[in-house]
Length: 414
Ligand code: GDD
Ligand code: MN
Image (cartoon, rainbow, N blue to C red):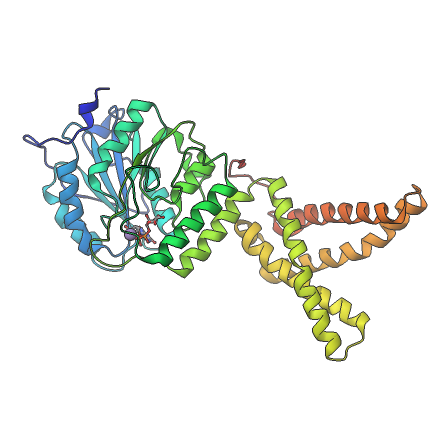
């Protein structure tokens, strides 16, 4: 592939397209463009742009894209829109006179937020490449052909526009607070997924190109903003390349991310990290250890209030159980809660947690009396045994579906 094929040039006698409004409930039909009638043209691109109330950015964005996309690069633009303003109408109007096809998929409910919108777009794409880009011009449109060109040249499956390699910068990231949050999030994420994110200096980037065939859309469970992280961890592109970019100022409107997105991000990290049984068991153990804190605090409060220490022990243990339950629900089994009512889950969880205590004593007696073990190693072994049993029982009795056991996601390793 020659390099200049990807360089933008003036459009001579461009074909004109009219915008296409997709039916959200309809089948996953390919975009209605001349190219997509047969096999995808080599190097063809679906440019997925998620929008949430971005009316003020659409005109400038589409006009810069028209200037940036080479006439011979088969590119379709797909807006996946969750707006409550007139963004879809603005897109349809602005798209009337463009040299590439534009479609709008408006969703009535914003399932999965930004990430969910991108996955909806991915499901509709039947081109060689998918490029994901924000609508607010923080991602320079002229880099779209460069991202795809880099992938074609290097054979990479994923090309990330990065702020953290020479030539890139986060100029448009407003304020020290956001810079610190972004840097902390990047370190945390790289630390949690060293293998999956090897070669990706900017896993928080929302601007990237990926080969369509590498994306297993059904395995994706996006939660909020970090769709690149989701794709890199669950789809494991074999080869990754990066292109530097300067994160620009927002052209119009305001960022939609806030504290709520921050919480979603942590939950997303936990969900990705705990996709294998072993990782989940480790998480279960760590959460269990953290439960000592509320347990001891409650014990102190109750005895201070004059309660006898024995009933206080039992009551305080329930504080630890409740703490563990809340963390396990939100961090480990978030996507498995729907099989039972929450009251049913609390009840079962509490029974298992207390049974754990009751089972430990006869087990220790068995190890000491029957197998002649010393008391200390017998206690350690009993703790370990009841822990593994409790983990397995919690998975099976609290969070697995009642009848058929289905697995949808690929196990995650990192
Ligand atoms: N469809 C849809 N649904 N689009 C959304 C939603 C949603 O719920 N929330 C946000 N968007 C769209 C916005 O309209 C915009 O086009 C794009 O997603 C990014 O949203 P911003 O609100 O501008 O995000 P940001 O600038 O704070 O964050 C960007 O930069 C981060 C790096 O610092 C995003 O690209 C992040 O993914 C990225 O991590
Ligand atoms: Mn933005």
